[in-house]
Length: 106
Length: 122
Image (cartoon, rainbow over all chains, first blue to last red; front, side, top):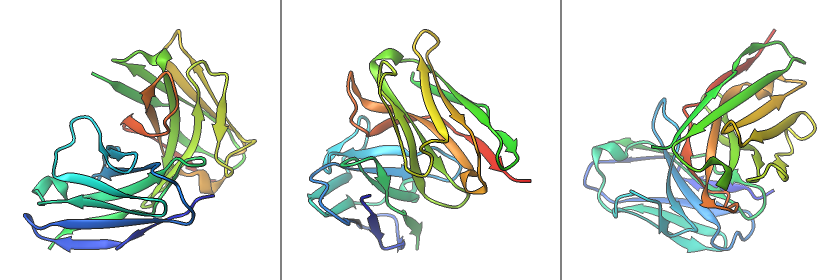
């Protein structure tokens, strides 16, 4: 099983700041990694797939990078609606998710 | 508009069974693989099971293999999850999700339902 470790567990930032979230895989997953956003009481929302491709309708301030075992989700300038929990997910073997990073308002 | 509506959750005793259903609309259901993902209270996401577009191929997480069965009825635009021998650790919100890739399995999920809560407790 591929274990995904996300860091930090919690990130406290202000609107307008840049957010950098990390996801590390226990073994190479090539570029087979996605990022999701989840707000309280809501279902997850696909943001990024194949490490760097934005899903349909996702704003350009969201970008993804990385390959192999180290991946990054960057939000270039935080909007109020971006404060949520973010999960990475790999599909190299059967799908697994990271434990999440909570992005909170500072 | 893509819609996924789960049903069938509830309170069940350990060792019991439940059958979840997910009714889909707004897309060509028979062209997309479907999956179930669960989230225990206050916890992260866990992929549970997936089914191919025809239903001929099914996949399970190790934690549910042998106890859960996924199936689909393309004539009813519905995917099911039969859950047997339920345990306390199966308590979670169960989400139905649609694969992003048409006529394939990308195992990226672009639309999700709102979920149905399954509670396993005596």
